[in-house]
Image 1 (tube, rainbow, N blue to C red):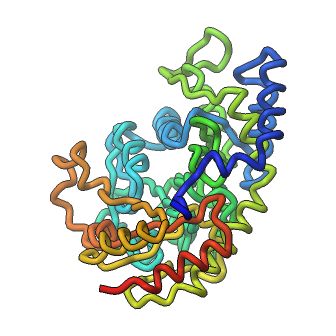
Image 2 (cartoon, rainbow, N blue to C red):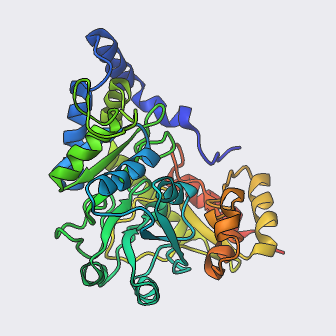
Length: 379
């Protein structure tokens, strides 16, 4: 592919010297878990997200699971409680809920932004007033926090766990529960993923929890370390979900370059927005008041044409992907519980979405060239 969808080797090449220095520093230290690199990353992420606390953990899914489990241990949730989440999310969002013995309430998103709309959430809360928690998913790097969201959450006394896996550094148009607009600080807690494909990607698996709640942070930290508050003293039946020092050090390198990476992605997205003119393609609809970080640039193409569209792009040397072709309620593991749900927007999107290249090394000129290939598509 002349324009690959994702080339992690090329993406990491400009940072090779810094990454090698960080790796050498960790090896030479002789300290590989729960050391200064992890502590420093936690401080830097808390600053970025505008929260008081950050707990580095093993991956994004574990970050979600640990917060939900912590709320159960703290008595803020009870087994079986309902957690609302948008239905077109990646399956990890739903896995975290069911793994915790809680009940997902899947809600159709707004079809133009791909995210949960406050009005749609309010309708569901009126039908199911026993919903106890909300998991807004900042899908594709777009903040899932519309006008009136904070007031709606307070009205219904919801716990809020942001799935911030794809939106590090994004800003909502409207303030969250603590007055900030940065994703990761909008709700009571947030889970961020550092999977290698993310805007800040580890060289392996990693994630973190951010929060302003000191008790929650301490509970998550204990649960992630075998349920231990001090050595060989286990207050919870916990997990082994720690981030290692190597990933922390490498992530600190990546984090230093987040602003420039975000600016590059925003410039590429703007080039797509300006140059794609195909009548077959619906471009993403973004609130101008928010800061989108463009983890993915996702367009919609009518389902009968999607395969032909992707084949046309492939013939032009353009790699594409689908995020996501099979939504959680259509996955075999959930077919008995959710297979009969009526989620028309989610099902329609699953048949229409196409992700265009936006990760490094794609440039603005590349985006314009890709757009011209798109504009030549015809049935």
